[in-house]
Amino acid sequence: MEGVPVEIKEFLRKKALGLREAIPLEERVEKSRRIEERLLALTPYHEAATLHFYLSTRSEVMTEGMVRASLSGGKRVVVPVVDPSRKAIELSEIRDYDRELTSGYRGIPEPVPSARRPVSLEQLDLMVLPVVAFDPRGYRVGYGAGFYDRLLGGIQGKRP
Image 1: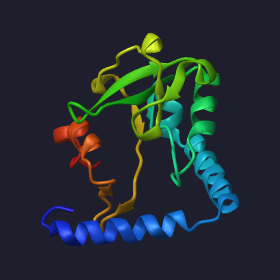
Image 2 (image 1 turned 180 degrees about the vertical axis):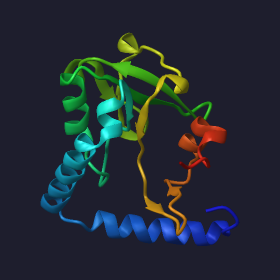
Image 3 (image 1 turned 120 degrees about the vertical axis):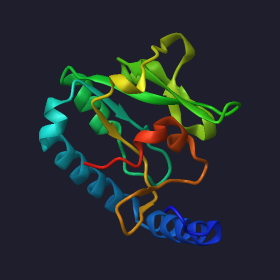
């Protein structure tokens, strides 16, 4: 949302989060299932060998099923590790959803230190990112901390 005043971004972010958090759990589970079904049917998903998934928390689209399906399908799965001191995201491969994850920054699941396998952004074929809303041009609006903005740097604004 380039050029939009910060106050307006914050208002829109809070409004979108409020609407999302009001979705009943049963409905969120069903919507997440449908999103997963659509993702797993996409050609870019099938062509991707290395995928990044955010690990869901709170009212976000639930990604656990997507991650598990990707792991069982032989895909290389990469997840974020937040380094709050640097305000940065590092990328790490996981191989076992049940054994390699623990509660991390703000309760978000992330790999335990002994299971971290660094991966570079350039190695990713496909990324599934958390989103609060989209602006009118289809650009992602996140939570406002800028972690993914810093990770993606110059490539974020490039669209096919």
